[in-house]
Image (cartoon, rainbow, N blue to C red; front, side):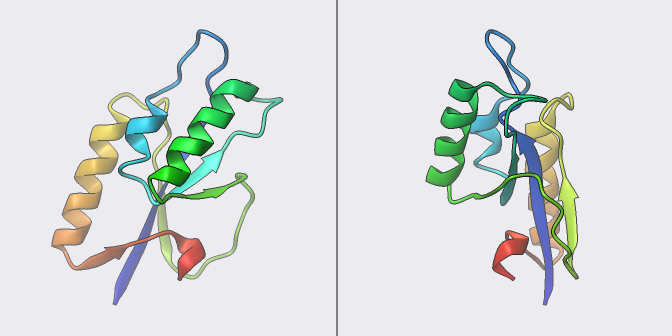
Length: 106
């Protein structure tokens, strides 16, 4: 069976600065690399993004490197049209027979 994880850096906004629509991306990706503050993200944005991701069934990681023996794709939230890219990619992969799921669950 072919498997792939679609992950995205999330929770990187701060204050009035929004870096992508994390809530919408939570409906498309399978793993979120959550900002942990200091380099990106503020406590309120990180908390709301974490909550939205968990409610959508997304596996949340701290952005650490995890060795895996499957393919993974990361769509950065600050990429223009990130939601459209991730959504289209997921649809096409599933049409091609891939199972899209978080790499933490394989």
